[in-house]
Length: 170
Image (cartoon, rainbow, N blue to C red; front, side, top):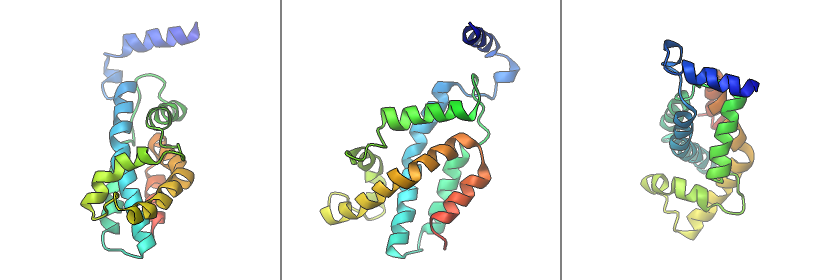
């Protein structure tokens, strides 16, 4: 009953000035789906550069990924604007729809990063190169995916910058 009342009120208020700047759940989910590709690609590139002990493009990639995460800061959802609500929707997209947490099938992430890695000079069709990236992808799944999700949901710019800077100190 209370949930129905909240939904009713949210629907009635949705076109008022209060909600002009707020995003719908579908807009937020679209943002998650659209931004996970460049976020993952750039984090993987930073981790690959760290592995190769290269600093050539790291500063640029860090700035880019911070900009990608910034799109999530100060977002207000039209209904149930809370960290927990955002977390639920992000996990729904990344885990349930995209299966990014599936360690048995890395093809989901390979599809996301393939073009960007090719543009950066890494042909993932080459077995040796793919094998090098598989360990980075597994590291992302085990050690970074939950942090990425938290950063998307938290609105904490300081946490975003701290995480990105600590990926690879240059």
